[in-house]
Length: 375
Ligand SMILES: Cc1cc2nc3c(=O)[nH]c(=O)nc-3n(C[C@H](O)[C@H](O)[C@H](O)COP(=O)(O)OP(=O)(O)OC[C@H]3O[C@@H](n4cnc5c(N)ncnc54)[C@H](O)[C@@H]3O)c2cc1C
Image (cartoon, rainbow, N blue to C red; front, side, top):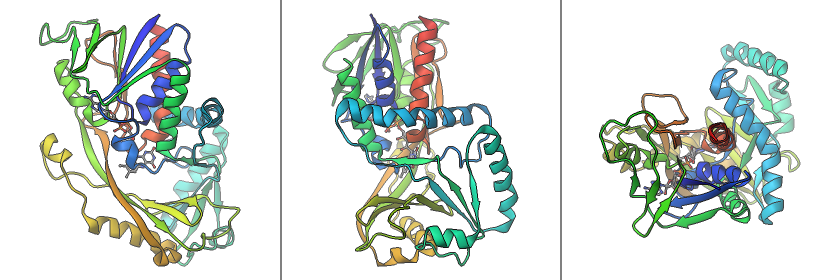
């Protein structure tokens, strides 16, 4: 039996735990200092921009495409295994284009996606108004409709992944920080192929054959302890929930709408999420950056951006405001999915920045593939 310890139970760690729990001969243990689906995952809107993203090749596109495919089976599979319902929206994403000079880029993307086997529709403003009467088309040059993209509630998903992994025999320890490793402190510069044999929390030591660090913004302290610092810095995001007495637009067509990088996410019963801000820290030290506070004005600007393309939102009541910190790698591309240099059994699966919900299933599959390749 191969013992694998996953550190961190946001959407990424939970997806890894679930995917590994499906593998024969594997015992999965997950440790998180908090409850599941806290951290960045608690703040996310769960919009999955795969086909509609401008990434068309390379690692980033392959991850998006693999996630998109896995999501088609993952949600029904988890709902049936756990009996939990996962709020999700399969009516696609409609992105509003306000500048005629951007149209050639969208047409080129449409042609590439067509060759890749995906649909991307370019709608005239009249069609946007017809399908989505709540959208003001005054400034709209075109609507780019991606029927295969989706949205999923990140907390529902993470809790279902945990329940699914538990049903498959995985163990979870919540409210316990990981504070150290066996095999890390012997010398400052690790030689190739070093192994960590145990993970320590204040309460226990867990013997392990492999470790996956999916701790988001908690990654740097671990990698410092392991003498391979991997900086992951915060980028703050704010969002809000808004209630309208009457749902917007056509009740039988409620896609996620995006205009000027502001998402409008329908949740049903007249509820919507609107967001999110993208705020880089001014502070240079990671400690100070982690303590950065949201500015109310920035969220007001995002709401104004949504009202500009969907005026009916102005009559809504704000029922919740929140913020979270996205884990963004420094000095390398997001996400970081790789063996920790110098070690043969420690994997990093972290730094998913703006796309952790979208990329969690593909990350889990990549980690599973690598662990299987090694054994
Ligand atoms: C406002 C906002 C909107 C977003 N919208 C989207 C979106 O629409 N689509 C999308 O794909 N992504 C979105 N994101 C990004 C997404 O939230 C992140 O990429 C994703 O949640 C990262 O997941 P994670 O599991 O890596 O990290 P986290 O959710 O932060 O989880 C890391 C976990 O590690 C644990 N941990 C850390 N240190 C330790 C330790 N020492 N011991 C034990 N446990 C530890 C933490 O407690 C935490 O539970 C959004 C983010 C924000 C802030």
